[in-house]
Image (cartoon, rainbow, N blue to C red; front, side, top):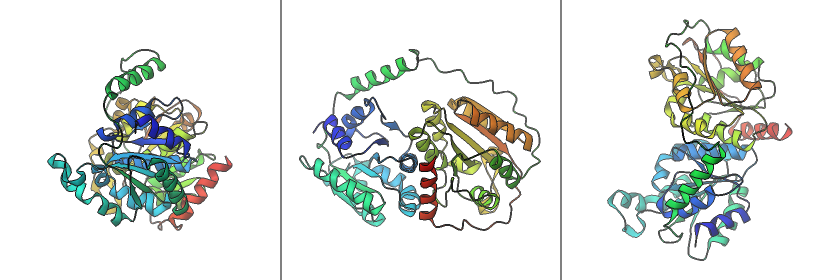
Length: 388
């Protein structure tokens, strides 16, 4: 079947958010999804980031699809286990089956052999796509993922989806996208990076969070795992707070997915330096997609606080400079309560995406773990979004 035919079936069965990492076995499908005039395919930098995007899109009311090669199952194991499955985020995983029946390049053979077993270990239901079974399987996938509130998978062997000829189509898509942005392929000029010096930090993360929370109003906030969410919850436990218990590094991806499907309201991320460094490619996704409602705060204490205070590279690397280079509309660094409040107030009131680096001390507050179950965190956050 052609990629356009499969894309049409996905539409017919109510799937309305598409992301992933390419594989040549479904290049025709991805090209068809990229050409959609509404809600086109979102290119992710890694499969686990795509899983995060899908979670954010589901929180915003969508029924997501994640496209990946079966090698991406390895990349996304933790995201699937400690995000999608733990919280109960439905998504359809379209997984290409490289190494099928032991016929492929050497690097695909082992993964081809163990792909069904990996899905079994994750307890993700799956079926294998055949030449004439797509309509039936997509109906099964929608029913199963909605009923289970969990991901399901369709394995796609070689030769099921047509391939070839997508390079010209992709060039047409890229050219069309360029024309839509004003007809120039030149890189956008980044704001002046300024000097590398910062005023010494004088405020703890707990104190900085308390300042930021006062400026939020009813804005939804995706919290990075660890003490960022624990201290924020202890400061003010809001229904609009999504607390990440696991899946380190995916807060920005989840917030980005939410921002893309709910463009009329702010999507705020409270991140940490260790979390951000684990998934730096998400900065490029934000910069390239340029969601005007995306506000990204990184509370940077230059250590991995939850594991004993080991140093992070942010001691030597300015994360706000990386965000500028990635294409955020603004990127600023702040160190005082007044600066934090002013920066967040400005970001919530102007077109983004915005990046705010909040440099804080390494002091850790004595706060309890998040008191809510993953399902409660998910459901009250989604209800808060629906009321907005």
